[in-house]
Length: 337
Image 1 (cartoon, rainbow, N blue to C red):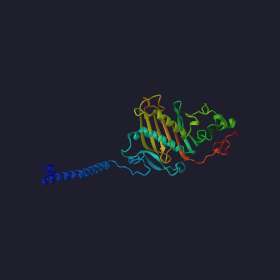
Image 2 (image 1 turned 60 degrees about the vertical axis):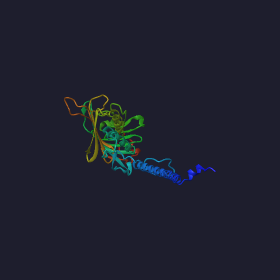
Image 3 (image 1 turned 90 degrees about the vertical axis):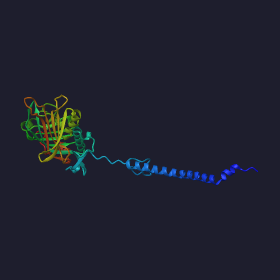
Image 4 (image 1 turned 45 degrees about the horizontal axis):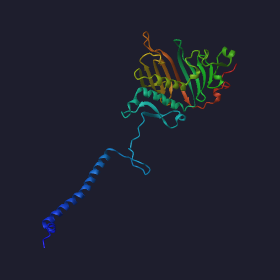
């Protein structure tokens, strides 16, 4: 019988150990491969985790979201307003920027700050139902700056209503205006012989008699109309290339205020005034003083004052009623006698 050569080659001791070594080597490679891959995968995952923080995912959350800290406000907070009825216990915002470079430059731009200040004043004024104050005004009429006019003022926001009683000049003169009533007329009476002869007058608020010594009609008197005018004019006029806006701290009487100064670099019919000073009361967060100036001239480099209004002793939400704007009020002097 011939020998089985194939069986002999496979059963040879030398070949047996060679095949066993090859098989062992393949087994080691097979087991080491997944282990090395798992280690590399864990290292890559660890590297990603160190650079991106993920918030925990709740059972209802469909996917992971990057954890982002809430953006802090761009305006600092000050003490609550003196009138708790106005804003309750919530502190209102001041005009100073929070220190640091964590906010976009646009939020710190002077024009943006000025517009935001007016917006915040309007937001506070929306919570004002009524107020009383002593209104002091000076106005330039036909090129002549008049004497100060001082009046006791009552105002209501809904419906817009104004009561004025003059202290100087013409002490004792009174006027009442209520939006949407009395056919849009101002109810007024003069003093002295004029009161005895004419009694209660029904005047067109834009007519020559009502507008005597006035730049603005009674329909535009008060803090609300002032804010509306500033918002409209500053939105249209403030230009970073032609307008300088500055902020500082000033006093109006005993009241600390933020002062915003707006100055235009060139004269233009598009600009109402050359310069404006607006004083916002620290505690109330509302304007209590306003000054506007005309453009200076070669002969007079000092800009002339055009109009000035001060709301002294301002008290908010005092509870005015219909009788406060009624000519039949026994404390008033309307009627023929």
